[in-house]
Image (cartoon, rainbow, N blue to C red; front, side, top):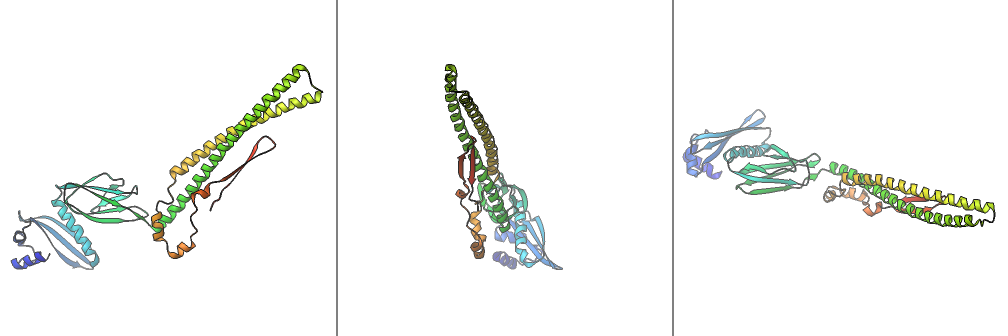
Length: 325
């Protein structure tokens, strides 16, 4: 800019840029961006003009209006990028924008080009601005320059807002607790099914033993009295009923375990990792928040303590204790 102003004074150029061709020749450049700034009411009017020195003609023009002096620099940068982009549109490089967040909106030079995951973008040489934004996250902005036909990659780590982080972790924690409970319930049901199956096998073995004894005694007609015969027969009936009840309980346990397993799969797949944004948690919490917040429970505290107690009716009582926060 100092060289530009010095050449203007040396050549006697006015603000109307009537001698920009001579000025460009003195600077040894093909193009010159010149402009003017005025105030209309409470707003500032900025006009930038792109001049082709070789052809001695205006090759582009951009007008910007801003409502404060603090926005003039950004407006000048944006307008200059638009003008230069027209020159370098035939010379293109490749831009790769990556971020961990899916569905984030990507803008290049203020223009929406898609959402993440974003395919490679062909853009002209020169300065550009890329913005990545998503609801609940702080918008990331970075200026860069492409000056070759190569590939440039920009990776963004979007920072969640405090309100989003709090809501996200609360929802994720509920889903994770549901996943642990459903998983533990499925494990209990599977264990119960195994227990009832073992119980059924024991009843079958006992039934076969009693049946052989009953058949032998019946064949030899060796009953001491009728009451003993009736008691032996009733034992066969009771053991058979207990075996059938154990089979039914095992099947019910398998069905319940399958349902709980599907529920657990849903919670694990649909739920998010509660610690996904843990690296930002400490940055956003104040000392008072840290003092009041209880320590996060470890995953192992969600595992249940399981008790299986046989009862006198041929079944069993299952109980589980969860240490939830």
